[in-house]
Image 1 (cartoon, rainbow, N blue to C red):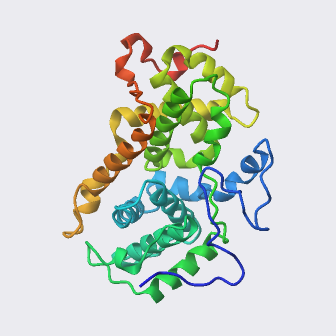
Image 2: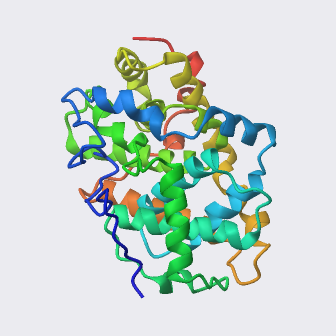
Length: 325
């Protein structure tokens, strides 16, 4: 049974692109300016509240609720690419930030996850049906239940569904990099996308603007792929008036730590162990699948993507140790 319904006062089914969220948008969003000013002005409207982020970090808000919901989103999106679940998790965090789930029960968390995926699928024009929710784990939600939850989420998000995410700033910031060779630019972008996807699991980065995460991901990727040119790249991207340099370098260091510690897969065992019908390694499987899919884009021109450990050890330094050009 297809999950479709009509909204009379907003067109949610207009095609949505994470990299260009304001394109073809209706009157609720102003048209993007040539210099991307609109994206920077609007990005905070698409972030979770500061209180929510601090509550997660302090343990006041049950982190297990978020982890379980993300695990269910990952499960529901197992046959899709990485951007649908990313958008769904963005909706999830903004909903929990605004609405919360008082005394959350497992079925409520699952329903919220279902509805976030359903909304993300509609926004991206991804074919989705109720049967996608009825597989492993015994999810038995009818279309009406999902529709009611969708309206609740829409209200909490103030109908701002064309999310401005780090992907929205990739093209803007990559223009600061003096890379003329298309395969090198594609490799840089592909690695930055991988880092952004992983960063969504790290609650520390939730306090940062999407633009900062995008700039940091590109810098981190450049440090891995082109370490000798990193100081010049950092100087170039730091020249952008929209960039808070302190937050950017802090984010870069967090990403570097995240890569070393593998924090993106930390909650898998404890989350999925609570459902006997859910694969224990579902998030690991999905991250592995998504990373392979993204990395494949960088090899279309028969170019092997370098790894950070392919370079001499003396290039593997902390970001704060690197000097400007």
